[in-house]
Length: 424
Image (cartoon, rainbow, N blue to C red; front, side):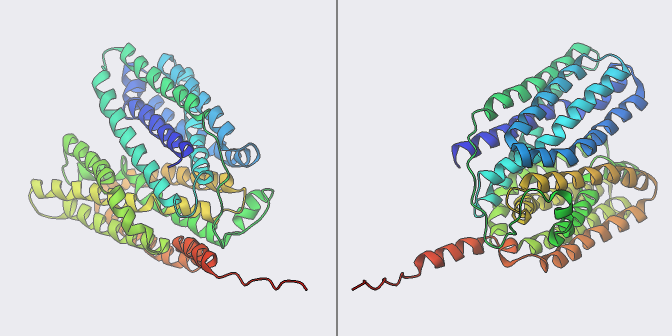
């Protein structure tokens, strides 16, 4: 890695570490520690999603016009102010306003950092760069949550103020790190469309492959990420009788699978068609839903049900590890010259929509409609495979198989140069 990429990865780890301190304890903090009730706590979680949906359509254009680094710095300062004020807020209004600032800043960080990775990587290094980003994000969230759990005390408001203050410091530290990054322009892969940065959303919607990837992305996030802490956990508790400690083990198994498998699966993914890798993820997640069905609808022992439920989360983690070096680089390679920020923001918007709709649909189903819930999301997983293969027909050879770009360069560089006849 170059110096710029190393600093970007350090920034990813720091931001995830800071978020890990507070995200698992946000509901308890608002509802119980501040005594504002479950309704206000639920509104705070909703504000995070709404803030992201509001700012992301504008973030892409800002990244295209100003560059990712200035936009990222503004987002980090906004998130730091939101985190610190959230730790000091004592009323519903101040809590909601603070959550809006934190949510908006956090949402803009994602496409800004992704665009920076695109700008300092090449076609042949991009998959590994995004895999490293995903690995560090999960590691940072896990370590931050673990340390935060030992610092927090539900009987002391000051312990939560400390957590949010640490989160704010992490964002400000990231500002310092990011100001040292020098952004070179990365070469683009062969076969990518070339266009000006003025097309905006109309141009994006005219890119058939990007529209298909956005639809696929919505289903991916809706059927997996949108179910982790809502429908699937409710299903596990209500249908499979999973204890809270076993649920924590399942979440830990998901993170552990990502951390352990990320670079092992990278070698498998790097030399295969991206569309087929995504299709394989759909099949793996279908198996995960079969395991979840056995846990809640089978007639085995409680130990077998718990093991099946934990394996569901582990299989989801395996699929996530395969997606991280596949989907984000594909978004970048579909973007015309200068439009990576717009495309990254659009895909982040799709992700936020899926994460907002997923719990709303999956939560009630997982809690009460156990068999329909499993069957529905089993079909969604199979739909991922179908959508991925369909999308593959809209990709150029280099977009679906990025290693071909290097092969083309090598072939061109090895072509002998014919001597120019000397003039007489």
